[in-house]
Image (tube, rainbow, N blue to C red; front, top):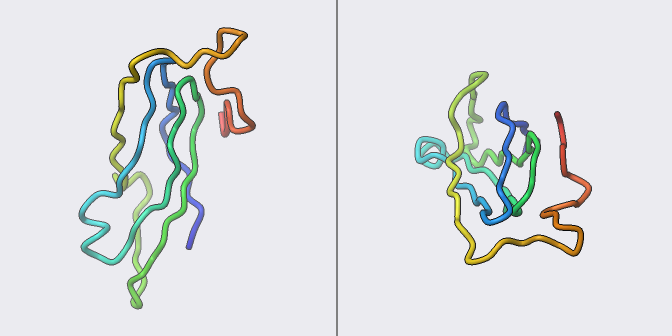
Length: 95
């Protein structure tokens, strides 16, 4: 498995979260991506885990499209007592 970083900086509003899925081309080639949920209020350039199950390996060119994000609108915002969303250790990561 390989740790990968994304080019895009993601900024989620307080009323939305995101989940990800690998593109079907990767899956057909025996490659997948493991991710977590991006919490409401998160901002940063995230990282994930690329898992190569293909015994012959797999080459991914720089800037390839490898992941699809699905944004989910929440019924209510997720503000904490300070009026903020996500404030964990990965807030503003890699930017």
